[in-house]
Length: 142
Image 1 (cartoon, rainbow, N blue to C red):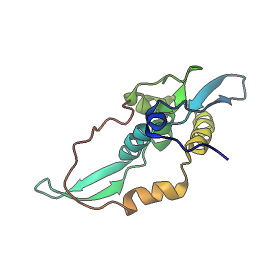
Image 2: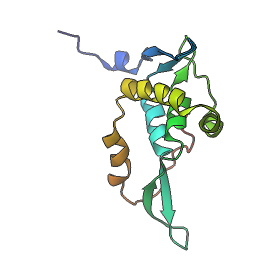
Image 3: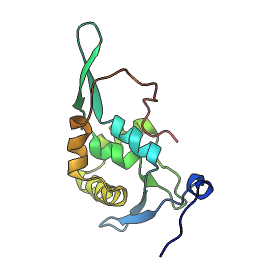
């Protein structure tokens, strides 16, 4: 049986799991778990506000374009767990990396971070229109 974790322990930086993703030619990258904040920011990057003619938010739509590249950007790391990409690299990555290689990275990232197809569907389904919050729009913020 495990130990009951107290506040001090829960607020300490957790060691994030990382795994090696190997490609057919022997090259490889590391992929790691996201922090809670990174996961929230990543999910926010997949949502697009719908506004009326006055600029008032009236709803939300899924914005799954570049989903795979965005997930790769927030999970590919070096051996020490430090991020390899900058937040805006997802567009270039999406254009330049083969779908096969990107899919290998994404499959492992989804497994490590417990991201399912149902999670993607639920992103918009569970949203309610309300006052905008003051959270950051960047999705790879630490």
